[in-house]
Image (cartoon, rainbow, N blue to C red; front, side, top):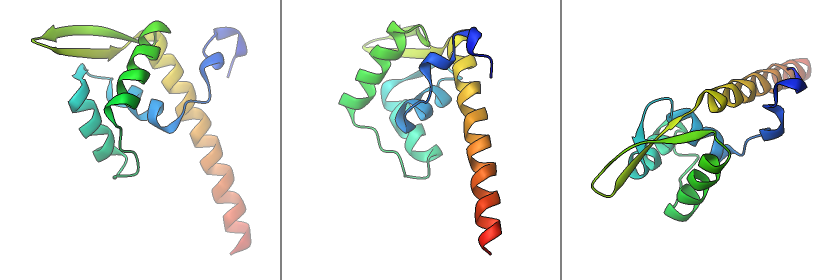
Amino acid sequence: MDVRDGTLRYLPLSEATYYIMLVLARPMHGYAIMQRVEELSEGMVKLGPGTLYGALAHLQREGLIAKAGQADRRKSYILTALGMDVLLQQVRRLEVMSRNGLSVIDSWI
């Protein structure tokens, strides 16, 4: 990871933020985001409306997501290029953590 690229200042992502960004690889509105996050996380992450909309506002202010459109009252969001870079860095962090964790656990067995 290159600290000069500016993405590291966003890391680490919280679990909720990670999943929100992950599902926003495609445009999606709030309720669909909540459902998809719960499904993708196998029920480990359940977002309430306050958490979700607070996170969406923050991510939009930071330029990590953008409004993709609006139909009636439903606003859709999508990951920006910066958001994709940050998400990729987070995935790489998780890979290292997982690899190290498995290595230590394997040494116990």
